[in-house]
Image (cartoon, rainbow, N blue to C red; front, side, top):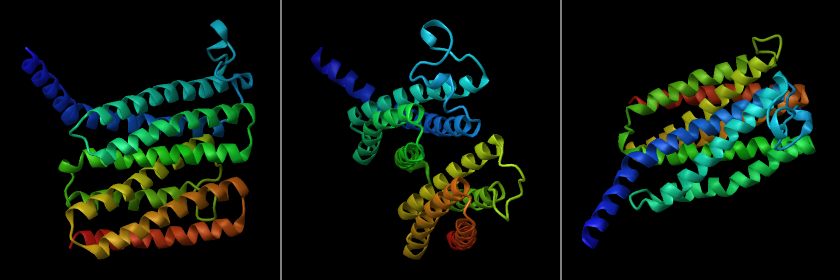
Length: 283
């Protein structure tokens, strides 16, 4: 009986490790990305101080838990999805930690994400109660850090299915995302006359795809191609991507022409790097 129980338990853990954790991590990654974009939507529509600046309550319904109007709905829905993202992060961490077949690096990444989650919740609270630009920025970049860690963790658990043939396709996503990022920016090369909430939401969606593409391409190159030159190029591309993301956000927040120019110059260098990396990866 004991032997049968142990065998069943081992089979269940193996099933979770093979099918449960990879899909759970992918779902969590989607929820984290959705939470970030909904936060951008709340800020862009001026809904960050809706819900009458209450937290975690809102401004209508039983115990003021529900939204009273459209701006409050943006803020409330952001919190609602963030709650499920938090539960998914905790579930991913517990599942990865308890699954013996899961890479310990994956477990470490998602556990760190779980540790950062209450910090992120506190920062979200402070964006409502304090609404200081430093707190808003820290709240955003902590979310980006959690997103990046889950991109890495998800790529690690899906490693057996990722091949060198995927590298050019992933890089092509980055190559397409970058011009869109510039086109949606309020710079001289931007194609939008009004940096509306919809434009901001689209630009930040492109930002997430840009970050994810360079992370995954770098990891797969390290695993599948014996090309240190390409790997070094992609590592530099990852640094450039972070710089472009940071400068793009700062340029919007400060409306500084010098930052606009630096952003556009680095975006041009990054575009060239993507092109060279795609050419090299296809050789």
